[in-house]
Length: 232
Image (cartoon, rainbow, N blue to C red; front, side, top):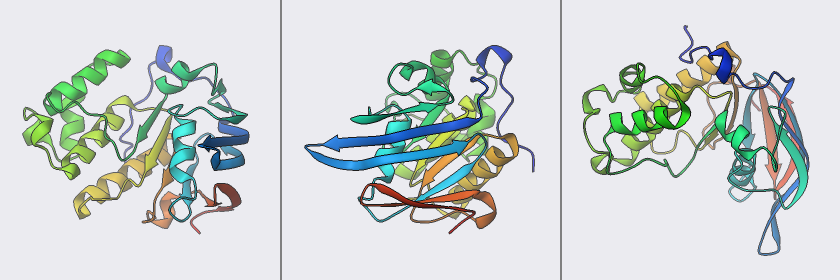
Protein backbone atom coordinates (compact mmCIF):
# COMPACT_ATOMS: atom_id res chain seq x y z
CA UNK A 1 0.00 0.00 0.00
CA UNK A 2 1.44 3.38 -0.94
CA UNK A 3 1.65 5.92 1.87
CA UNK A 4 -0.89 8.72 1.79
CA UNK A 5 1.66 11.04 3.40
CA UNK A 6 4.16 12.83 1.12
CA UNK A 7 7.78 13.36 2.05
CA UNK A 8 8.74 16.58 3.81
CA UNK A 9 10.57 19.32 2.04
CA UNK A 10 13.96 19.59 3.72
CA UNK A 11 13.19 23.05 5.14
CA UNK A 12 9.93 21.82 6.66
CA UNK A 13 11.24 18.67 8.29
CA UNK A 14 10.80 18.29 12.05
CA UNK A 15 13.83 17.94 14.32
CA UNK A 16 15.53 14.55 14.08
CA UNK A 17 15.02 12.91 17.48
CA UNK A 18 14.61 9.42 18.89
CA UNK A 19 11.46 10.13 20.88
CA UNK A 20 8.37 11.70 19.37
CA UNK A 21 6.81 12.21 22.82
CA UNK A 22 8.72 12.38 26.10
CA UNK A 23 6.68 13.27 29.19
CA UNK A 24 8.04 13.41 32.73
CA UNK A 25 5.53 13.54 35.57
CA UNK A 26 2.99 15.57 33.62
CA UNK A 27 -0.11 16.61 35.56
CA UNK A 28 -3.00 18.80 34.41
CA UNK A 29 -5.38 20.16 37.05
CA UNK A 30 -8.86 21.59 36.52
CA UNK A 31 -10.53 23.33 39.48
CA UNK A 32 -8.23 21.57 41.89
CA UNK A 33 -8.84 18.12 40.42
CA UNK A 34 -6.14 16.41 38.29
CA UNK A 35 -7.45 15.23 34.91
CA UNK A 36 -4.12 13.52 34.31
CA UNK A 37 -1.62 12.87 37.09
CA UNK A 38 2.13 12.17 37.04
CA UNK A 39 2.16 10.85 33.47
CA UNK A 40 5.61 9.65 32.43
CA UNK A 41 5.56 8.42 28.86
CA UNK A 42 8.18 7.85 26.16
CA UNK A 43 7.01 7.15 22.62
CA UNK A 44 9.63 6.54 19.91
CA UNK A 45 9.24 8.13 16.51
CA UNK A 46 7.06 6.06 14.19
CA UNK A 47 4.93 4.33 16.85
CA UNK A 48 1.14 4.08 16.52
CA UNK A 49 -0.11 4.08 20.11
CA UNK A 50 -3.69 3.40 21.18
CA UNK A 51 -4.82 5.12 24.38
CA UNK A 52 -7.40 3.04 26.23
CA UNK A 53 -9.48 3.83 29.27
CA UNK A 54 -13.00 4.61 30.42
CA UNK A 55 -14.61 8.01 29.91
CA UNK A 56 -12.89 10.47 32.21
CA UNK A 57 -9.66 8.48 32.38
CA UNK A 58 -7.68 11.39 30.91
CA UNK A 59 -7.21 10.33 27.29
CA UNK A 60 -8.47 13.56 25.70
CA UNK A 61 -6.62 15.73 28.20
CA UNK A 62 -3.38 13.89 27.49
CA UNK A 63 -3.77 14.42 23.75
CA UNK A 64 -4.51 18.11 24.24
CA UNK A 65 -1.42 18.55 26.40
CA UNK A 66 0.76 16.88 23.77
CA UNK A 67 -0.80 19.14 21.11
CA UNK A 68 -0.09 22.21 23.34
CA UNK A 69 -3.81 23.02 23.43
CA UNK A 70 -3.38 22.73 27.22
CA UNK A 71 -0.31 23.46 29.32
CA UNK A 72 0.83 21.05 32.03
CA UNK A 73 0.11 22.25 35.55
CA UNK A 74 3.14 20.29 36.78
CA UNK A 75 5.82 18.24 35.11
CA UNK A 76 7.76 18.66 31.89
CA UNK A 77 7.82 17.20 28.43
CA UNK A 78 8.97 17.41 24.86
CA UNK A 79 7.40 16.62 21.51
CA UNK A 80 9.95 15.94 18.76
CA UNK A 81 12.57 17.34 21.11
CA UNK A 82 10.66 20.63 21.48
CA UNK A 83 9.68 21.78 24.97
CA UNK A 84 5.95 21.76 25.74
CA UNK A 85 6.16 25.13 27.48
CA UNK A 86 8.79 27.04 25.50
CA UNK A 87 8.37 25.69 21.96
CA UNK A 88 4.60 25.61 21.53
CA UNK A 89 4.67 27.13 18.03
CA UNK A 90 7.28 24.65 16.87
CA UNK A 91 5.28 21.71 18.20
CA UNK A 92 2.10 22.95 16.55
CA UNK A 93 3.92 23.24 13.22
CA UNK A 94 4.60 19.50 13.26
CA UNK A 95 1.50 18.07 14.98
CA UNK A 96 -2.19 17.85 14.17
CA UNK A 97 -4.98 17.14 16.65
CA UNK A 98 -8.23 15.75 15.24
CA UNK A 99 -10.77 15.88 18.01
CA UNK A 100 -14.42 16.50 18.69
CA UNK A 101 -14.13 20.02 17.27
CA UNK A 102 -13.02 19.98 13.65
CA UNK A 103 -11.75 23.59 13.65
CA UNK A 104 -13.17 24.27 10.20
CA UNK A 105 -14.55 27.55 8.85
CA UNK A 106 -18.25 27.08 8.15
CA UNK A 107 -18.48 30.09 5.82
CA UNK A 108 -15.74 28.73 3.56
CA UNK A 109 -16.02 25.90 1.07
CA UNK A 110 -14.12 22.65 1.53
CA UNK A 111 -11.53 23.77 -1.02
CA UNK A 112 -11.18 27.17 0.62
CA UNK A 113 -10.64 25.57 4.03
CA UNK A 114 -7.79 23.46 2.70
CA UNK A 115 -6.27 26.37 0.77
CA UNK A 116 -6.41 28.41 3.97
CA UNK A 117 -4.47 25.62 5.69
CA UNK A 118 -1.91 25.73 2.89
CA UNK A 119 -1.51 29.48 3.36
CA UNK A 120 -0.96 29.18 7.11
CA UNK A 121 1.63 26.42 6.81
CA UNK A 122 3.32 27.53 3.60
CA UNK A 123 2.18 24.48 1.65
CA UNK A 124 1.51 24.29 -2.10
CA UNK A 125 -2.14 23.97 -3.05
CA UNK A 126 -1.53 21.30 -5.70
CA UNK A 127 -2.69 18.42 -3.45
CA UNK A 128 -5.96 20.01 -2.27
CA UNK A 129 -8.08 18.21 -4.86
CA UNK A 130 -6.27 14.91 -4.29
CA UNK A 131 -6.86 15.05 -0.53
CA UNK A 132 -10.56 15.81 -1.00
CA UNK A 133 -10.88 12.87 -3.38
CA UNK A 134 -9.07 10.65 -0.90
CA UNK A 135 -11.73 11.27 1.76
CA UNK A 136 -14.67 11.09 -0.63
CA UNK A 137 -15.38 14.83 -0.82
CA UNK A 138 -14.11 15.49 -4.32
CA UNK A 139 -17.54 16.36 -5.66
CA UNK A 140 -18.40 18.85 -2.91
CA UNK A 141 -15.18 20.85 -2.84
CA UNK A 142 -17.05 24.01 -3.81
CA UNK A 143 -19.76 23.62 -1.17
CA UNK A 144 -19.71 25.67 2.04
CA UNK A 145 -18.90 23.67 5.14
CA UNK A 146 -21.95 25.15 6.90
CA UNK A 147 -24.10 22.69 4.95
CA UNK A 148 -21.92 19.66 5.78
CA UNK A 149 -23.04 16.92 8.15
CA UNK A 150 -20.81 16.13 11.13
CA UNK A 151 -19.48 13.08 9.30
CA UNK A 152 -18.55 15.20 6.27
CA UNK A 153 -16.79 17.68 8.52
CA UNK A 154 -14.79 14.86 10.06
CA UNK A 155 -13.82 13.71 6.58
CA UNK A 156 -12.66 17.23 5.73
CA UNK A 157 -10.60 17.37 8.91
CA UNK A 158 -8.96 14.10 7.82
CA UNK A 159 -8.25 15.66 4.42
CA UNK A 160 -6.57 18.57 6.17
CA UNK A 161 -4.38 16.13 8.10
CA UNK A 162 -3.41 14.33 4.90
CA UNK A 163 -2.59 17.67 3.32
CA UNK A 164 -0.41 18.84 6.19
CA UNK A 165 1.41 15.52 6.64
CA UNK A 166 2.48 16.29 10.22
CA UNK A 167 5.16 14.32 12.04
CA UNK A 168 2.81 13.60 14.96
CA UNK A 169 -0.91 12.89 14.50
CA UNK A 170 -3.23 12.96 17.53
CA UNK A 171 -6.67 11.40 17.06
CA UNK A 172 -9.44 11.72 19.65
CA UNK A 173 -12.22 9.19 18.95
CA UNK A 174 -11.56 9.27 15.19
CA UNK A 175 -14.20 6.63 14.38
CA UNK A 176 -17.07 8.32 16.24
CA UNK A 177 -19.96 9.15 13.91
CA UNK A 178 -18.27 7.76 10.81
CA UNK A 179 -19.83 5.33 8.37
CA UNK A 180 -17.99 2.22 7.17
CA UNK A 181 -16.38 3.98 4.21
CA UNK A 182 -15.06 6.80 6.38
CA UNK A 183 -13.73 4.31 8.94
CA UNK A 184 -11.62 2.81 6.16
CA UNK A 185 -10.20 6.30 5.53
CA UNK A 186 -9.01 6.45 9.15
CA UNK A 187 -7.53 2.94 8.86
CA UNK A 188 -5.74 3.96 5.67
CA UNK A 189 -4.37 7.06 7.40
CA UNK A 190 -2.98 4.83 10.15
CA UNK A 191 -1.52 2.36 7.67
CA UNK A 192 0.12 5.17 5.72
CA UNK A 193 1.50 6.61 8.93
CA UNK A 194 3.13 3.31 9.88
CA UNK A 195 4.72 2.96 6.45
CA UNK A 196 6.06 6.49 6.52
CA UNK A 197 7.23 6.54 10.12
CA UNK A 198 4.70 9.10 11.31
CA UNK A 199 3.92 8.95 15.02
CA UNK A 200 0.24 8.53 15.92
CA UNK A 201 -1.54 8.59 19.27
CA UNK A 202 -5.23 7.77 19.16
CA UNK A 203 -7.82 7.61 21.89
CA UNK A 204 -10.69 5.37 20.83
CA UNK A 205 -13.36 3.15 22.32
CA UNK A 206 -13.42 1.45 18.90
CA UNK A 207 -9.89 0.13 18.36
CA UNK A 208 -8.47 -0.04 14.84
CA UNK A 209 -7.38 -3.32 13.25
CA UNK A 210 -4.68 -4.96 15.37
CA UNK A 211 -2.01 -4.77 12.69
CA UNK A 212 -2.15 -0.97 12.68
CA UNK A 213 -1.28 -0.52 16.37
CA UNK A 214 2.26 -0.92 17.66
CA UNK A 215 1.52 -0.29 21.36
CA UNK A 216 -1.36 0.27 23.79
CA UNK A 217 -1.27 2.65 26.75
CA UNK A 218 -3.83 2.08 29.50
CA UNK A 219 -5.14 5.02 31.53
CA UNK A 220 -7.21 4.87 34.68
CA UNK A 221 -8.38 7.85 36.74
CA UNK A 222 -5.89 10.11 35.01
CA UNK A 223 -2.90 7.84 35.55
CA UNK A 224 -0.93 5.69 33.15
CA UNK A 225 -1.30 2.20 34.63
CA UNK A 226 0.36 0.11 31.94
CA UNK A 227 1.75 -0.06 28.43
CA UNK A 228 1.91 -3.14 26.24
CA UNK A 229 3.12 -3.97 22.76
CA UNK A 230 0.49 -4.32 20.05
CA UNK A 231 -3.26 -4.06 20.57
CA UNK A 232 -4.48 -5.03 24.03
